[in-house]
Image: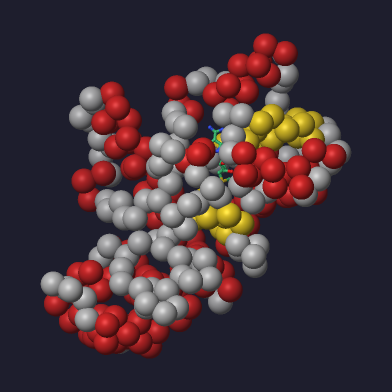
Length: 271
Ligand SMILES: C[S@@+](CC[C@H](N)C(=O)[O-])C[C@H]1O[C@@H](n2cnc3c(N)ncnc32)[C@H](O)[C@@H]1O
């Protein structure tokens, strides 16, 4: 059944104002209303609930199939809305949900690759919705940094990285740089969020591995090749790491955040 435009608006309004009975009625009528976005603004029910700070409704919508990473016309996702409104419990929920989706997707991908039918036990109950980033042609796609600096998008306008993940990246940087003079490596520059956080903590050596030409171009344009103690390795980590190991490079910590599962399979390499 085709979704009705007025009901899409009703759903958004119900999510903003916390009218759970309206949400339930609409979803019973057509579960697709969980993920329908406003044609004009791109606002989604999850964004509305996140802005309103309605944690229970966000959880309900995610379980009903609302995509955690859908973006509006400004390239903002529900996580951006929750961050702006400082609803940290919702930010945490979305991060957790996204992480779970990434892990499950990775397991599914490995299963289809290896012909292994043993999925992790959490898989049967979990939904994987609108996963944007497992794209075999990712490296050939044109990437785009949004003008407001809030996101890095791929050619389908799916988010590769988003500004709202900054607190998470900062926390990771703190873990990596737990003392002075550390030698750290980040795999996947994206928006350079974790690399900026690492720089603030003054590593002794800071290696950044990045495979995408558009991201690499951005790194050079913003002077990352001239930053103190930074060494950029342009290429897939699968190609760069063996060279670094052959050089005898040793690190205190490695952070790995490539787009889910693409260019794949970190777990096969023990570095
Ligand atoms: C999610 S973003 C990383 C965001 C980053 N943590 C930040 O704080 O902005 C993923 C990045 O990994 C890069 N990437 C993906 N696969 C890669 C690979 N095999 N080797 C190196 N970089 C890769 C992508 O081009 C992208 O820039």
